[in-house]
Image 1 (tube, helix red, strand yellow):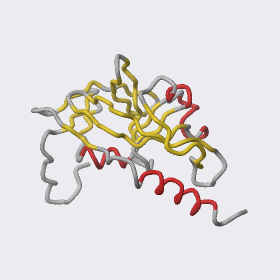
Image 2 (image 1 turned 180 degrees about the vertical axis):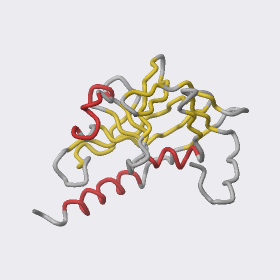
Image 3 (image 1 turned 90 degrees about the vertical axis):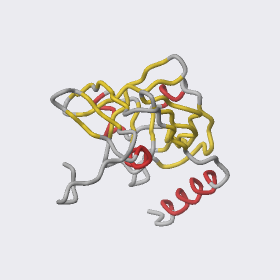
Length: 169
């Protein structure tokens, strides 16, 4: 196995992103409240692009902003930056890297969203997931409050203080 493959992959990604506009999050003038869909203990939120609404899985373990299936990518306003990258940590599955012009998450608009095209088959396809927000997108949104009983997600306009114990779970 070529031990340089992950480094070469990262180099292609970072080189392409060095000339890209940064991802920008523009929040509305109040908290964003979203109805969620919970299937198989997985949390999906509605995201709009153009005239289409897409359920995006929230994956706090995924180390990327956004990832979509090849079929979903064909329907999105995105441009390809790199046409061949590894999309999994063990360099078996290949995909592409692109930028989605804009996505609407309730009253929030995300511009220049970095998007991996191609989903890790073992992780996502068994649940028929076509679009994923990873922890890099969650960091940009600053805070997400998940209310599973109410089937709701709140993205506050202003980040709230952590409780005294330092965690809010």
